[in-house]
Amino acid sequence: MAIIEVQSVTKIFDGRDWAKPWKRTSPTRALDQVSIAFESGKTAVLLGPNGSGKTTLLKLLSTIFLPDSGTLKVGGYDTERAGDQVRKMIGFAVGSERSFFPRLTARENLEFFAVFEEIAASTMRGRVEEVLKAVNLTSDSDKQVMKFSSGMLHRLGIARAILKSPPVLLLDEPSRSLDPAAAEQLWQMLGSLKEMGTTVLVASHNFEETAAIADTIAVLDQGRLAGCENFGRRGDATAVRDFYFSVSREPDKRMVEARR
Amino acid sequence: MNLLRKFLAVLRRDWLTASRYGAASILYVVGLVFEVGAFYFVARSVGPAYRPDGFDFFSFLVIGTGVWGFFIATVSSFVSAIRESQVSGSIEALMTTATKPSLLVTLSAASTILRDGLQLIAYLIVGFVLFGATALHVNPLALIVLSVLILALALAFGIFAAAVQVSVQKGGAVVWLFGSVIWLFSGTMFPVSVLPAPLQALSKAIPLTYAMDGLRAALLKGTSLAEMGPRLMYLVPLAVLLLPIAVAVFTVTLQQARRRGTLSYY
Image (cartoon, rainbow over all chains, first blue to last red):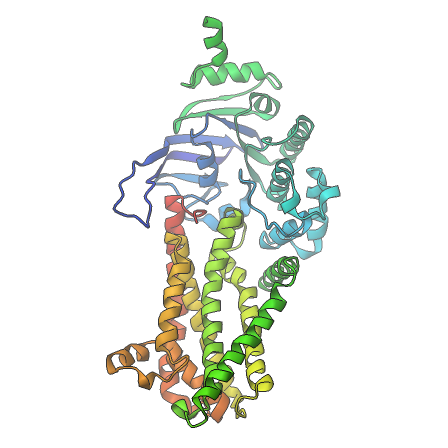
């Protein structure tokens, strides 16, 4: 059963500077008539080059953006008409590292967001400890986040996204800035979340990561859905790569090198 | 219960942040004493014979600038709350939480408003106790009602300013212009009666003119609510109407920013 439904979605950024309304700019078509559905309890990976529309799709699903046309539904709720319901269902680890209060510690930041996620006061502290442990930040939890490295901020972003145990988890390039051991730990954690029934949608550039976690792979290219398949070869990064270049317009550098 | 928890979470966040910035708050209090001191000597140099609207000039200045400062700081706190979350990058993370965006913005400004209120009280204490402004003759009920009205108007204008910040990212400039107009026309430092007739008409359209005049009367002359009649006839409906309109405008603006993809722009 599909928990995420995207129907004919187009998103255009007009790029207009509202301080200079006379200045003409060319609009960017970030998503163009994209239709796709993701099944409940599965992990799907969105692959695509920079600017292909992966982050835009995640932001549309999280209600940060609204579509210009088409509809997006999460758990049957329309992101435009029932945004409040959608926001209760999703956890979103935004790609940006600048999304915390820099002078607060990791624990204080998570406690703040836990209140706004309406996590019960009786379970809040325990839950914060759980997610800190899940992303391996317990020993750094009392450090101000302005002193965190890029990888630590990324892990903290994931901790925040899973705080409320959302049925749908959206992750934007989750293993970016992570060392190999931390990336593997993250993939194991995503596997455990899937076992608990969480639907995970990941935007990624990483074939190895995709092979490690994906049940479904969708490739976006210049705002269009270039291809989508159920992926059954866990761990086979070459198979991911082959599928990606078979549907994407991006040239396979290995093939180009081989032809030389 | 949830609302109180969220309010306390914002207070805790802002308190922790402020306390880790060191001595900034102490410097503010010291600055405040110097500011009130300057008004004291301005009033002394003008002399006791000058009594604008029948009030002692130093008391007139302390209440006028204190209330103006509170009003503008409160309006500005909404813009700051949005802008800080845009600059820190936390706006997108906050806007995907289970809390309604308009409540989120109001709560984000709440602790600043509380701080502004305490600063106003400190300002008045410095003026009336330290520098010995004229004796107070307070009507408590009128004082409370006018304070609530000033707060409601500041909240409404603050949410309008937040809408400007979300929409065109120029909330700070709008608040600065708005503050300057009010500074000049609402009787902050001199009575509006000295303005030319056309400008007096503009002054009468500004709600803070009535609120400031009413507050001076409630604090210095003990004027009762019944005697406040015309001022309240203007202020009460405005406060009741403006707040829901401001929330509606902010909600629409936020939807537009989501549509244009500019929520995190600053």
